[in-house]
Image 1 (tube, rainbow, N blue to C red):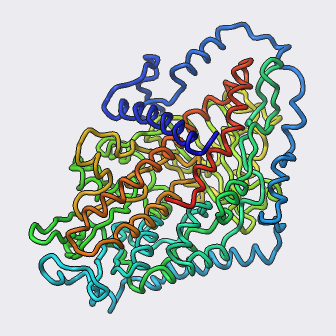
Image 2: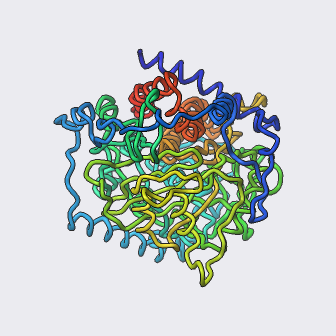
Image 3: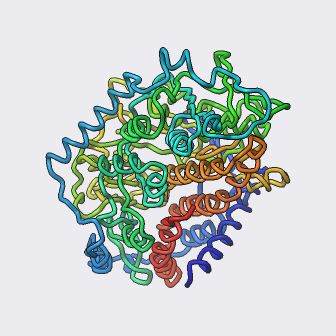
Length: 622
């Protein structure tokens, strides 16, 4: 199959997915059992319970009604499914061009952890931020020359950016590299040193390399290569039968490498880097000193009818002036709300790449309930999953062979990835209504999040979870290595790509209107299954600057931003559709393990498709 043919197939799948999303957004619901439409939990939270639907729902109901033959489920799983690195993966990892695995050692662990602390100190001290003299004399405080004008090295484009997370930083660095003036306005009260590491995959690394070779070099040096080991999907607990295949807890279902497709495309290998370190590198080497201003939420903007310039007003009333405004302010984007005239409340507090993980449990509880209302106003889709996440200071038992794995189950799954420095970043995704919160700690239960997670992923010999499934012990290995306070919980939302519209202006210029454009999660929030959310935001920043760099007169700004969005929207829609479809399919993966013929076929097709998916993701052109 050629790459072109694959893209056509992907486009069809994406279109079908977009149709489902459009139906959902416009208020139609897919057939579900009456009892599942609205669920009230013991926490008095009302929402729609996520569950199987369509063919999967029929198959699950049929399976429950059919007589179960115990003999079919007896026996041992295939020994080949217990091998971490099969020969076909080892062959790729052994290529001379592939990065060779360097075993964990104390010096590297100390280097990575020390760099994290250094970056955290910089963030707390506001080093390189817009404070004091930088703030008083900032270029964006002046309206500049009136009237439309030529764009020259002496009078470059002036770009205002809402949001200081990864999307905003990369967009600013890309525009600065093209000679533009840039200013970032981040609403957080501090540039918080929070959050787990980020996988910077091969396609995003190439974008950063083109934007700033220095930033690229610093990121690679600071990061941990994860493409030098195996990745894949495992079954969380014993499943299957003699007709469809038997799988023990922790058996591999799909194994793949990420370095092969990267090498084919001539791209660098994926690395994982701490979020504060990424911020530090981009602030130090990607943008001018004093370009980031915190406690600065852009509340409104207007376009000057005479010359098309932007006047953006901050929450404290400060006026800012520029030629271009970029909304990189996250899934609950205020700029998106204003651009598309969404209802009041659609632009809620954005847990952006600069602030989100800084929330304490009290703030998180309030935000969980508020987000349900915000999502309705903002036309965002609740995925059906709440997500617990943490970074465990723990050397994983499989660290030398495995960089990324998912343990699959019917109502939940557990994701883990190497975080560098003998740490593991993990995510526990559990199906339940939106807006749920955990009980507050008590004397009897001082660690309510850990208590719940230990029950949800109860391991072999414990009696299992609420459904009697005894999970592979790796999940508990990481959960037990984590602290209660370090575990963050949030509901996962995504949204229809902005192609899901009949507005002619948005069809022609999906992410832009006049001198205002959107990027990152503001336009394509996606489920985390592919790890491409930040990577696509990075590609956005690169393409945005490339198109703006062609502008020779301020009259051309709107056309350049429209072209940027037309170039980006198809690729991101396909990837977003993949991520959403993948999340929906994962929860029914366990069902396939029990269906003769169909189950093995589905599994085989998943195995065969992964290299093609990665080839589509890892492209040098975006």
